[in-house]
Image 1: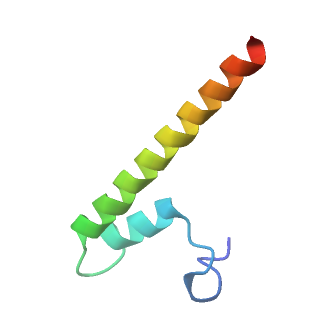
Image 2: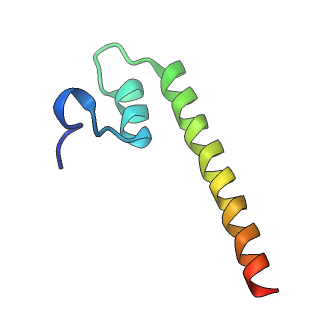
Length: 59
């Protein structure tokens, strides 16, 4: 909606990764892939924390 806000202040990891990889005339696939991998690791950590808290609340 804000296209990154004022000077990319509200850019998410997903859009940042896409812009690095495909947004320019000279794409930078390496940094784009690194941001994508960081996003996957963060999702995995939050997912594991969520599963752990759900197991504890059921017991």
